[in-house]
Image (cartoon, rainbow, N blue to C red; front, side):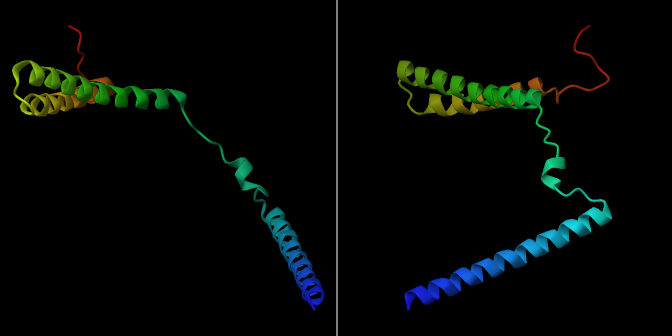
Length: 119
């Protein structure tokens, strides 16, 4: 009995594959008639700019470095002056502000296009 159901499943699978193959063939013919590309995934151009990726890494590094330096200075002051956790809190916030300022400077968003920083 199991052999009979296996044969039925095999026949059903083959008929499904034949129907799918016929549909794909029909679709290919319709695409050729309209002039569309038969393989759209091949016509898609991937545009990843390595310099943009490098710039993104630089900007994220600027922010993280500012926060880490601020946290380290605050931690050192906490240990030296015994004012735990205030030095860390204050310098962590100052480090974050410095990191954001560095990112703005590095991105060039803080400059007016008509003015130059050189005199």
